[in-house]
Every structure is written in structure tokens, then in C-alpha cells.
Amino acid sequence: MPLQIRFSSNIGSVRNENQDYAGYYQKQNLILGVVCDGMGGHNNGSIASKTAVETLIEHFKTTDIETYKSTDKKLIQNWFNEGIYKIDKKMKELVLEDENNADMGTTLITFLYFIEEEETYVFNIGDSRAYLYNGFLHQISQDQNVMNYFINEENMNPETAGKIIGWDRLTSSLGPNKTKNIDTFVIHKDSKIKKLILTTDGLHTFVPKPIFEYILQQKNTSLAEKIELLLQKAIELKSNDNLTCLIMEVE
Image (cartoon, rainbow, N blue to C red):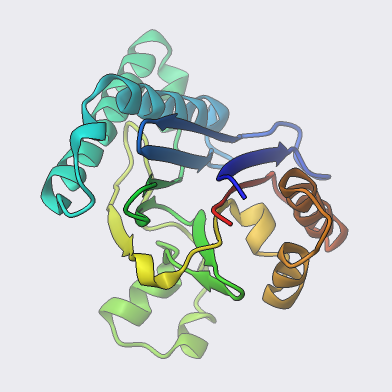
């Protein structure tokens, strides 16, 4: 089966605007996939997510990333950091055009897949997620929120951290006046990826892992249909947010 990639985004049943944004681009031996979730309640979250996705894809198109090998870890990290710098710069320009953009923000989850080498880099800012599926669903990224801060930095047990008021509040996001931290993950060839999945929290918060896996395992169902089934299942299970899912299917 040839490699394919699809995505879909849904406003959901509660929000008045879809502040999610997604995109992908293939360039020779590389595929870039990216999903962003504009921060609800913040001014112009939809502008932030669209700006982040389009700027990163343009960075991918116009730089020589295709000359890198998957083992060039430092070069790849520097390439991504440069892309984030360009997003920051563009967002600050938007603030100069309209001061209402000053508080905009977005998450960003992205993968860089080396087709021939079957190696993957995942970069995360915020609480959108990357998963790999190889018969089972595995979460790759970690949500950058208050709960995980206390688990990682204060050695608090997950049950206690999950009871903190505002446990799901972001500790990192992308925006002209936001604090951001970049997490980088590498998925090696021996992980035997069948699918690489990017989601926003309107989907993954509401679809339990067994149901997620069941939908991915469906035979005689196209990749686009599986994505729509995931989105509709989240809505059925009372998702209160926008929903986006991007899947690259390797086999």
C-alpha cells in the first residue's frame, strides 16, 4: 500500500468558530505534518493556528531540509527552531497590525517523516498530541500542562496532580506573548509505524483508547473514513471543543 496522508477538522457541537488548523507537505524523501489548536478564549486563536501551520509549511518548502539525513539531529532541531522563530516573527507583525492579536496563542504538534529511512521526528508545544499506531496506539508526546509539570518537576504522583485546580492549564504555548517550551521525540524504524496520528484535545480527550484502536483497525474503511469516524465518535461522546485529526498511513 502506498503511503498516504489525510486530515479533517470539525467545529464540533459547542464552539461558534473552529480555531483548529492543519496541513501537510511532501518534499522528496520528507513529509511534514502539522496540527495546531488556537487557544479558546484568547483573541484570534484561529489566526494564531493558521499562521503557525502556514508559516511552518512555507519554512519546509523554502529551506534545504531535504538534504538532511535522519541522523542529523542537531541540524534538524535547529531547522525546527528556526521555523518557530519565523512563526514568532509573523505573529508579532500581526500584533503591530492589530493590537487585538496580542493575546492570541496556539498549540503546535508536528512530525517530520524520513520516508526511505523510516525515521520520524515529533515536535510539540502545548497539549495537542502525536500517536503512533503499530497494531496498538502509543502516545508519543506529553501534554505540556500543570498536571505534568507537577509530575515531572515536583515528583507528584499522577492521581494527586490530577486533582489540582486547573490541572489541564497549559504551561507552554506558541504566541507573541506566550511562554513556550519545545519537546522533541524521535521514533525509530524498529517501532514499525503503521500510522502516525496528530490530534487536538477535542478528539483525544473524549475518545477512549480501545475505541480509538477499534476504529483504526477497521477493514474495508478508507483512511478518510476512519478520521471522520473518530471525529464523529468524539462528538457523540460529548466533545466540547473543535476537533482535528491528521493521519499518515505507512502501511
